[in-house]
Amino acid sequence: MELDQAHRLSQEIFGTVLESLNEGDLSRESNCDGWSINDLVEHVIGGNYRVAGQVEEFSNTESIFERFQSSANEAIQTFEVPDGLKRMYKLPMGEIPGSIFVGLRATDLFAHSWDLCHSLRIDEELDYELAQTLYDFAKPRINPMMRGDGKPFGLETLAEHGSSITLKLMAFLGRNTSRR
Image 1: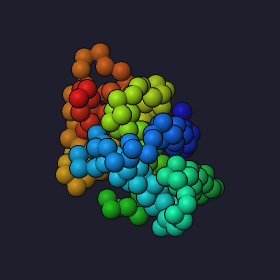
Image 2: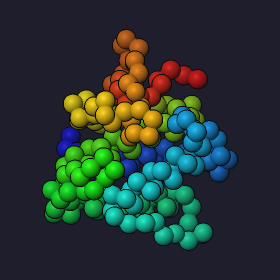
Image 3: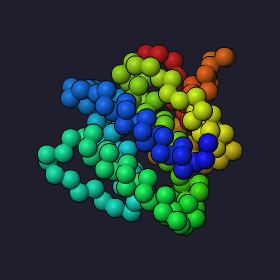
Image 4: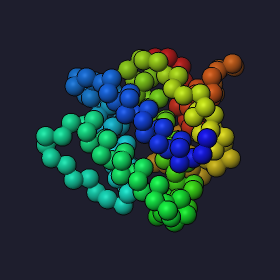
């Protein structure tokens, strides 16, 4: 699977999981330390707008799902324009080409889809082929300098022997893959 396809599919999966939320779920604690589920969703929406080089503007009448969909469309369109994967993007970790940024963004979205599932105690097995693509992308690129407090990824944890590729990816990204 190409990384731009992985990004689009990661956006779709996050949207599908988001649709399963009810209003009361937004205030619940998420799998991400110190974040509510609402904080997690807002992080994803903000990240999508940062991809597009925009600041979110929304009306109070838009639902969180509508806001996510708008942000996802902006991010997808940004990567899918002719130079979207070739141009350089300025990020806190430095300038990187779109061909790498799209993979990092897809990985972040997939991880946060899993975070929502884990937080809500619903099925965490998302998409096998996508998980494998993102694991293969992330393994050689996410290094110790990118891990720890205040950094994009947590310290790698251990997945149980025989774990699915989804759980191996989540453990590699620093998630605690055991059930609470």
